[in-house]
Image (cartoon, rainbow, N blue to C red; front, side, top):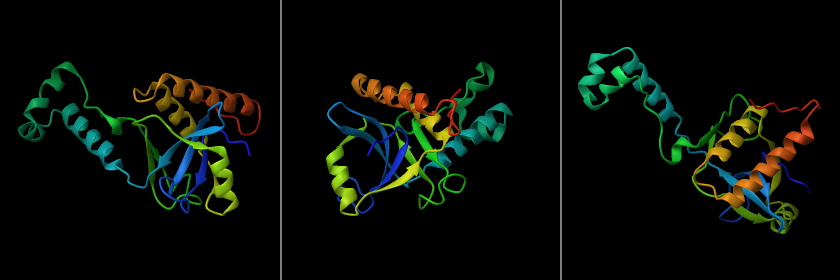
Length: 185
């Protein structure tokens, strides 16, 4: 079976280290799939807190600066608080809007290392044993966001990055002009 960038595979019944949903992001010449694990631990509140802090800075809210004095320089220089580190490169999957028939809750994919590798033959065996199944695929907007995260990630090696770009470009090429067209801006 051919796998494309953004395919979601349900491997919850598979042995460790799988045991979750996985998202395919590429394929090596050795018939290995590159994938990231989807986790249900969602730190979505982090972005809400950052937005709140930036709003307090924008409004020059004095009580905020009483507790966070070191941020007072941001009013004059116009800088914003941003996420840094591994959680800055996270794709949040909206359960209600796009994945209610597939995932069991809001989920995320953290891009903080090279993608993991899985031999295609192992996945075929897992499918045959009923321990893995094709779940679906990312919606078009999430495909674009994931591709952007992967292209700009500092955690991905050059060889993996090239394989991921090839996979994404072939997906775009295959979908061009069809009803499932993906347009990334």
